[in-house]
Image 1 (cartoon, helix red, strand yellow):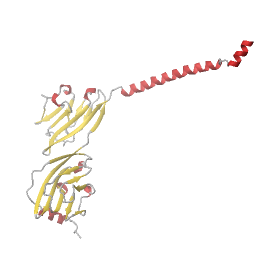
Image 2 (cartoon, helix red, strand yellow):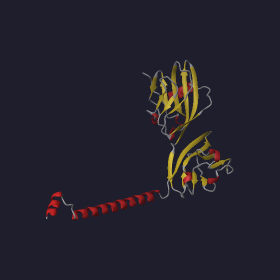
Image 3 (spheres, one colour):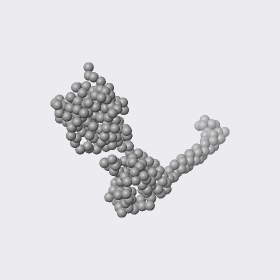
Image 4 (cartoon, helix red, strand yellow):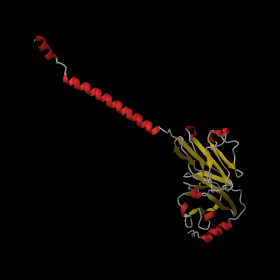
Length: 279
C-alpha cells in the first residue's frame, strides 16, 4: 500500500526535486475555461509528478502522481475533481473550470530515472467578457480587474479602432492625451482600479472595449461589450403596439356594424322571391 502523503513527506518530495528552474512563463485563462499548464520533461520512466501552488504549498498539493498512482491524501480540497494529467504518466496539468482564486504561481516537479526536473508557471485568470447596457446621454463605468494602484500602466482601446487612437491611457504616472481618439476627449476618466468611466454616451459608443494593464510582471487583458440601446426604444415600441391595438379595434367595430345591418335586412331566399313576384 502506498503511504499517505503528509505535509512532512510533501516537503521531503519537494526537497528531493530541487533543481535549476527554467524561466517562468505566463499562462492566461478565462474564468470557467479549462487550461493546460505545461511542464517539460522526457516522457519516459516517470516515477513522480508533483504540482503545487506556491501560496498554498504548506497546506497540500494540487496533484501528485507517484509510482503509477494518483494520491488523494494531502490534496487541496479546492482542486478535488478539477485536475488531471494530460495522460497517465504525462507531466502536463489540466485544470478544469478555472476560478479567479486559481490565479498564482504553480510549480511542477518531476522525477524520472534518477533525474529531477522543475518548472514554474504563472497562471492568470481573467473574467469572462461582460455585456453592459446603457442609453444615450447616460454615464457608465467599464470594469478592469487591476489592483487599486495609481502607478499601474493601463490602456483602454475600442476593438477595431486601434489605428485611430486609444480611448484612455495611463503610463509613466501620467495620463497620455497625444494619441487619444478625439471622440473620447473630455468624456472619459480612468479610476484607481483602472476601470473606465464614460459620460454623455452616444450610439456610436457601442462596441467591444479592451482594457490592458501591466502588473505582477505581466500584461493582463479584460474585454467588455458596451451596448447602447435607443433612448426611446421601449416607449416607441409600446406606442406602436397601442396604435396597432386601436386600429384592430376600429376595423373590428366597423365589421361588427356591417354585420348588424345585414341582420336587420336579411337576404330574400329564392322561394320567397318567387312568391312575391306572383303576388
